[in-house]
Image 1: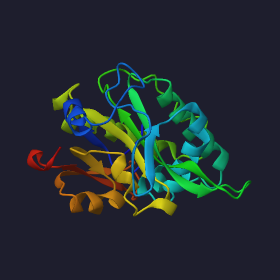
Image 2: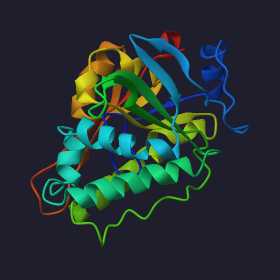
Image 3: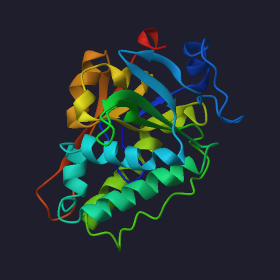
Length: 253
């Protein structure tokens, strides 16, 4: 799931009617125009799913930064994130703040788990996973300034090439569903909580563009490859690959 500025191991789309069918036993009330929002959905494996708020921004940013440490797209587009961690943190947080300001277009979910509080020593509920859904894919986003000429953590040419490829991907593979789809822009679970099935609370995939780190998981779940993409800056040997996949309808929701 790639975010608008680039993040995550895949991108998926799903019809709103399928979401409502799958989630019919749950109550979604956070925004009247939003078919996917809800408050504290049932827990699984010790996790709780809920809508994110502005108060979560620091935790969301932490999960994003620490969760994507080894993600190939991050290594490719943000090669100086360790040299300029403040830039990486601030621009990432700005992106999520913009998602939260547009509830009729984006749904931001977090999953919480009990973690020790360093100050009190007691266990407290903290976000350990994030999902960002674009529920109005044809509506223009009031996107945050990506800071291509300001931030120091990026390789500008690589990020521009990645964003161009992402735009082509939607037109080529996902545009035929028009507004009858929901696109998962970002999905990440903190590495301390991976392999506990928390991420299964955050997504219901139908079509997906997976990074090298996510491809094997989605193949295991039954996705079939329909195309392979390569991002490459002219004059460079280094590339970034991703796989466009689909889960057959009979295996879907």
